[in-house]
Image (cartoon, rainbow, N blue to C red; front, side, top):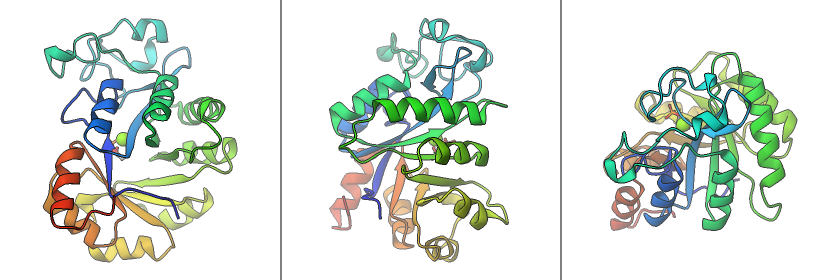
Length: 251
Ligand code: G3P
Ligand code: MG
């Protein structure tokens, strides 16, 4: 069993700071999150960075496919001003920086491998090899998840002992076989598509379940009541305080 908190910061604290940046991670920690989730992909020259979309336009000052820019080119972009002018100057974070910050802040990590098209195995291989080399052996390893099965198979190969999260949006008929094949420790589901019955099915496989993205206390309370271990949220403080208010927070 993994020591999972009931509240995990989604892309840091995505409602309060520009998602997947270092300031978003610090914000989540300041809000009381013990764990954060981030999205990992590769630059054109193979450097693992934090970014959700395949395109640069929504969350940076750049345009076009993220996979077209080298790390050096990407670092010239602004990854904060789109969110609010006070965050201007924030840069696209390197995975190496995220790992160092998580160690500094003693945060648990969920690294979601979010490959650009055609780069699933490469992204998982490069990112997790780097994480393995940088992550302190005396800290619990990051939980590594992906919607991409090929990426998860590569994670299992590169880091045989690190926990894997099997991500589901619309579930496929063979979700059980795939989760078994990569030795998934957890199943991460879209809270809006699930029910008490489906959560019970996932839990019956002996796995802990996490649900994304839950931004209200009543919604969090409902899925936690179904047996979900924790929720990913853009607003950690709201949920931590709201759940604690009625004495149901499990940390
Ligand atoms: O890892 C949970 C969640 O982040 C998956 O969806 O699109 O927000 O990365 P997305
Ligand atoms: Mg994600």
